[in-house]
Amino acid sequence: MSAPADRRRTLRAEPLAPPGADSLPDEFTPRRLARRLAWAAALLAIVVLVAVLAPGLGEVRDRLAEASPGWLALGVVFEALSCLSYVLMFRAVFCRRLSWRTSMEIGWMP
Image 1 (cartoon, one colour):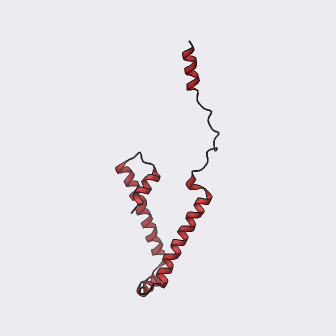
Image 2 (image 1 turned 90 degrees about the vertical axis):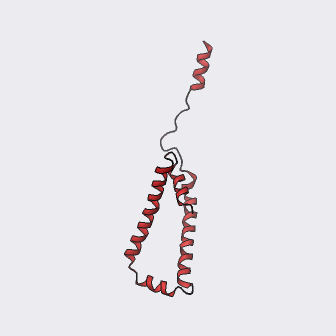
Image 3 (image 1 turned 180 degrees about the vertical axis):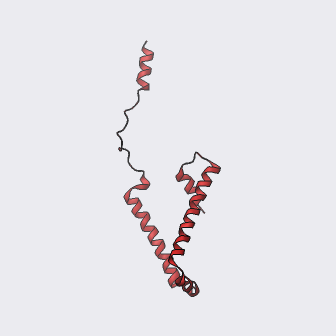
């Protein structure tokens, strides 16, 4: 009779954490998000500086000056949707058990 009692003790579940008690993953902490935003802003600033200051890009600058901001924004949106659709299809074709994060990392790596 002591075996079932011992078994009950080992199968006893731990108490559940109250709702909302789980913390955010490390990737979403405010400090890490601020650091990533700073990197993205720095890279964007470098690209803008190269486009403005690099010799030999005068024709490109002239064409961009004549471009419609609406069309440029639409092009950026379509490119972002293209990237997202690639990740969706990658996960569906290769492995549905992959997490979305892993699918994004694999799909967007050069």
